[in-house]
Image (tube, rainbow over all chains, first blue to last red):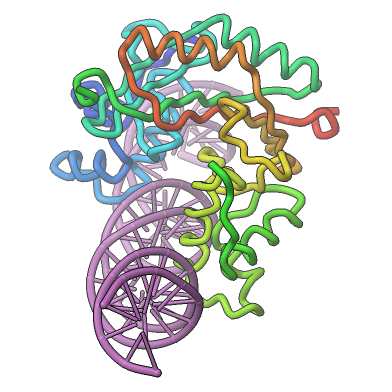
Amino acid sequence: MTTPQLTKNQSLVFDVLEKAEGPLSAYTILDKLRDHGFRAPLQVYRALEKLLEYGVVHRLESINSFVACAHPGDDCHSHGIVAFAICESCGQVTEFHDHEVDHRLMAWVRGQKFKPAKTTIEIRGLCEACAA
Amino acid sequence: MTTPQLTKNQSLVFDVLEKAEGPLSAYTILDKLRDHGFRAPLQVYRALEKLLEYGVVHRLESINSFVACAHPGDDCHSHGIVAFAICESCGQVTEFHDHEVDHRLMAWVRGQKFKPAKTTIEIRGLCEACAA
DNA sequence: CAATTGATGTAATAACATAACATCTGCAAT
DNA sequence: ATTGCAGATGTTATGTTATTACATCAATTG
């Protein structure tokens, strides 16, 4: 999928996520955009919905937050399953991909005749700096 | 870890989850236990907290729900990372384990000197029956 | 210009989770 | 047995995350 031109709200939300050091909740994004006219959560959620669809933003299910995709430019859907390491101390998120993991999961899924739509892999713990 | 004797509330919550066909939200559990004297969400969340700790219940992060562990008797922590396939149509959840996936993720983690605490793997999609 | 479509604005509410504080219960130490 | 503690429980209130419902606006197209 190619990413279409972002709308005004989508751009605002995406910019906030790109400039952020770590993941943000929808309500944190909302607060950061009050000056730009955002008043209601739905403005954020609607933009996020599209950004997720375009693959330029990821949702971290285990912490109800959102991050900009680590691959500037091209969309992330082509990299296979995305995995995240989330530091519970500093909030830093590292995105990675492992094709062997993908293969194993997809092999299991095939064996079950399960039809996967969206796969979540999230490792929560402490990053090197925080574990020291 | 060995599972201690469950308290009254823990037993009630666990029984509800065991008898359920699929994952339940904390508030659904609460509703099912009103007749047994449950009045507030905290009663459920406190029981769940312990049951998760004992490894007899799992939390499905992507759907804010809880399921009884598929391994009756022994605790689940010994099986390595737990993965779930969640049918978005019928709600059925299948729990599985893949040591190769564990190895790959733990190898990545070691390379980053990341210290993992809790890992989530959830595949959402359609089960064989629902995909037909 | 009318009709359609997608984006946006706004208010209200639903769904999920925790904080703070009081009370109770079982049990160990004296 | 009583005191003191720890863990479990009860209750109220509140905080956080997400969606429903409905109105409006802007761009496009027939």
